Image (cartoon, rainbow, N blue to C red):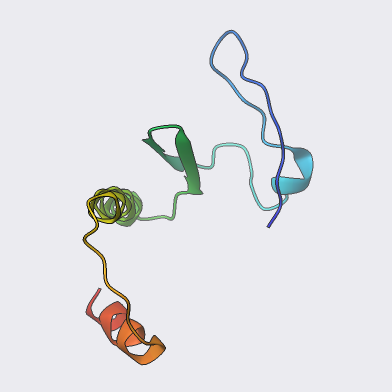
Length: 85
């Protein structure tokens, strides 16, 4: 995992550090999610609907986690759950 520190400009812009944008080109689209103080930036695929659905599921998972609605499972159980998605 790479970590960088950036500043926001007066226009609300941030710069992705050069070493983190090697596979990003001008015009690429991103999905951005905000939850409390956490911001997640994900490069959008050709099908942005899938990315938005990812954001929706992430938000719901955080809400469930914060309410204590989660369970522990084995690797095999987890992989079976993933197949349902």
